[in-house]
Length: 90
Image (cartoon, rainbow, N blue to C red; front, side, top):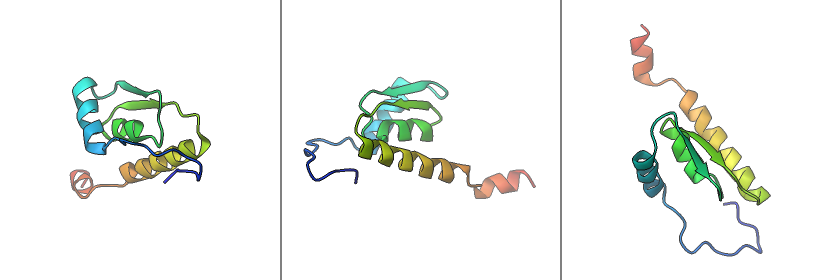
């Protein structure tokens, strides 16, 4: 999705399920997860989704932009009310 024409192929991209298991296993809610080679932000995305903070470092502008878009979309999704949230406040 963030690939440029001259990019190399990723031989083994990480699956979100694998990242989720690692984040759950080696961090606690509220802690910070560091992704020094963030790519499109998968580790930071999962960390944020699981109630952690995430810091990602990425040098390639197209990957960074994709990461920002993914994280903004997640923040928008997480800010939406859930059906049971409205029942609790009633």
